[in-house]
Image (cartoon, rainbow, N blue to C red; front, top):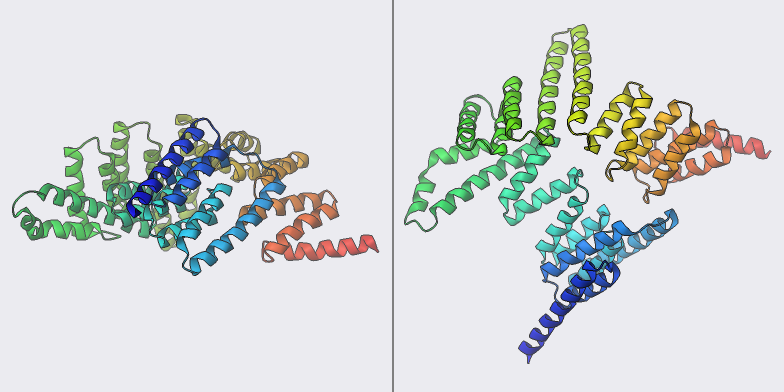
Length: 467
């Protein structure tokens, strides 16, 4: 009888999955979510269904258009639900917490706190695969979020998918080339990929494992690769090995990147750039290679600047810094020409124009970069700053209000936006409006910029006007 009930439950879960999948394909996301929720409630380990549920939650969330008030209300409800889930988790009711997490993610599957809690619950309830694709899904929809990518990389390592872990750490290292922790994790992943390949090759061969264990040279190489910084004879050995790998597999870009990292670590920047330029000949349309080349050249400038400062040559250091800044500007301009649809590059170029006071040029770039979900709010903020510098206060306010409506939580970015709205209102003489904006920031963070001073001044102005 128990076996029959199990079979019936499995069949019911499959039926809910099939119906949910069909509803998703028709674009009926709410119905699909209800059906898939019933599916995973019956069968918590049905990974495919949970993955489909996550995709549906994200599709529904992206399709919805909510007002600022609705978003605030949703945020309050989500906070209450997170407290409820935390209570269930503390009480050891992990399966119930897992179900409630799906309801929470149906509200906002990309909110960082929702994602973190869902991951914690999935781990506690013995569903690591659910934790992994929750983070994966969030990252896929925020591909520039390095924190999410880091979580993805760490999960790949935890579940033993070392190839994917290595690829994720490669991308992290390209964005954060000076982060030694990431570099160490990358080397560890690469070493594990190498070891796994060796064991696979040995599988099925009598006594082949003895050759692997006895291969002390290979063990030494893996030990060297795992070091955060490799120098001296160790570096020379790994560099020679990396060059040999490139000769054997000239189309494997990961080998070029690994060699360039080793060379950069040892301050052989010109050689590192040459290697990356060779990689670009293999794939000329890889913007990450361009980023790596830029980062390497900037590192070379920084080393020279530090050396000049250490030698007491302040004037030489200043000249070199000017040269570096010019390079950064020219390089960004050139990359925007090569990748005109890369909105992150548009944003970065806009920041360069803004930095040097070319506000019209900056506006042009920010108006393009605001189309990117990742850069949208920052682009709107800096658009507002450009208009403010040009004396076009009404245009600045319009950009900031648009940004404010799209920020449901009083995080650092929202504080910056609301604070700027307050400043513009104060400059326009609208004391009550300024007070309202300042009060919101003050209530969230009393130490933000000079908000305390401004609040005191506004209070006095209001009192004098009322008196």
